[in-house]
Length: 300
Image (cartoon, rainbow, N blue to C red):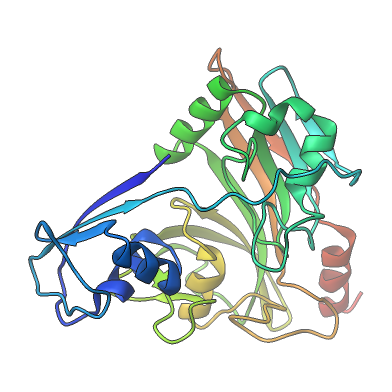
């Protein structure tokens, strides 16, 4: 489905391609391609990628679905199913597996495993992301919900859009977090110099993350995190921005000899079942490699 973005420029003197990339959460190169093909207008007129925008200008961007890869093939990849009914699955995704096709990850991903388990999902939500209504980073573990039919896809997508799905994570952050409870509010967009990273930028999209420190462990804090919005890398970017990057995060913090990924686990998921609206809750224990890190820094 083509996405429609009607935007009013607040800060001027920014290139159109960069503005579209940041506000529509697409790569700079794709923004340039779409501008060149006439999918973007400024004040009702076709424009060039390098055009500088003025405050108050109206930008209309139509973002069509990305080109689809060859049909995703089912693969016999183990899945940990937490719950299932006729409408959806709740799976506990391990770290190290990508959710859907991405550059460098065309196969051996979560959707391949899902299609092997539920072949009928091939037409749900489009062939690029069958049944996928939200995602976790490759190296983040934990709970995800997968739609089995179009009714469930619509219901779960609406709940996510309306922010009624409750997602809670356990994270280990560097330093002693203070205050112990609070919220981080800072807009997130593409990093101005590295498109593979996200950053807190004034032109980014609204992002809010609630947190509650659970306990201090040596020079670290174990924290429960509840993002209210769903921006790319939101938790990792927000905690790095306030000087408390996630333990082991190679992109926004620094690598750890004990752990080959960031310490982040989606341990709680609460939402309403389609179609009856019953509220359900699911939990997931910390994976063994994360428990090992806690034992090590606690001196156990």
